[in-house]
Image 1 (cartoon, rainbow, N blue to C red):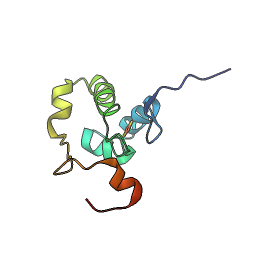
Image 2 (cartoon, protein in one colour):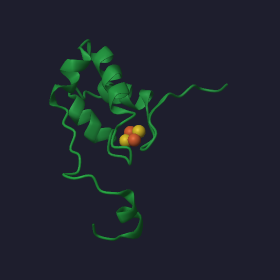
Image 3 (cartoon, rainbow, N blue to C red):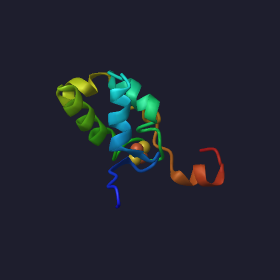
Image 4 (cartoon, helix red, strand yellow):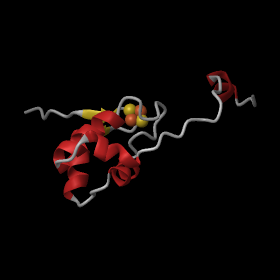
Length: 92
Ligand code: FES
């Protein structure tokens, strides 16, 4: 029998079940959950997983998504850097 798995963070291979298990273990702060599971720490910087994880966390905790994301801070680079500098190891 095949078990269905819902992948939330493709960069770090985090599933919905991982999130629910962490909540069961007692994690009650979304920032702590993010750091524990490395949600948003992958190459996409959480563009596709943070909001989904926040919704799962909010539903499990009976909170609103806005409440859950109140401490969430996006830390972009100070200036946009072309990807070619990362690929070749050059300095801008
Ligand atoms: S999908 Fe989660 S950091 Fe990229």
